[in-house]
Image 1 (spheres, rainbow, N blue to C red):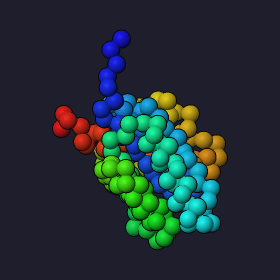
Image 2: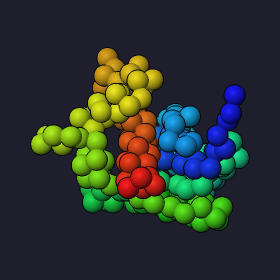
Image 3: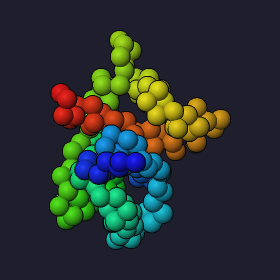
Image 4: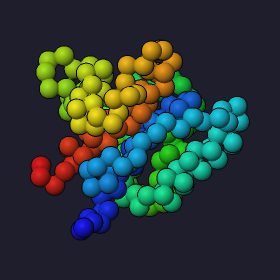
Length: 170
């Protein structure tokens, strides 16, 4: 069996104040996805240390070539903590020598929705066609579960949009 080298490994992140959606793509294949919960939100120093540990574990586990992050909306920018969390991700990416690209919710909706009704929900539903392994995280019975897994879907969406808009065939 011939194994392709992992030349194009993308770490996609959907940051939040409490959770992070994480998706890793290798040669356009979704090879890892999870939601990481940040526990040390009371102390900024411990928060940044925890984010650094999460990122370093991912960098050590995968030969990441680029970090793609969901950009923070105007509304989310009102949260000083979230802005600082994103800044910490940028610092760690730069320190590791990795380029960082932002993908907006508008880009996600325009790339993943193929009709006039571009919504985040429709964009996420289109991911289920591309990645049926995500089906069990979709449409959970409790609102908190749907909110929690929205970070996972956002991270996968960010990676898919980056791949679709930056592939060599375009």
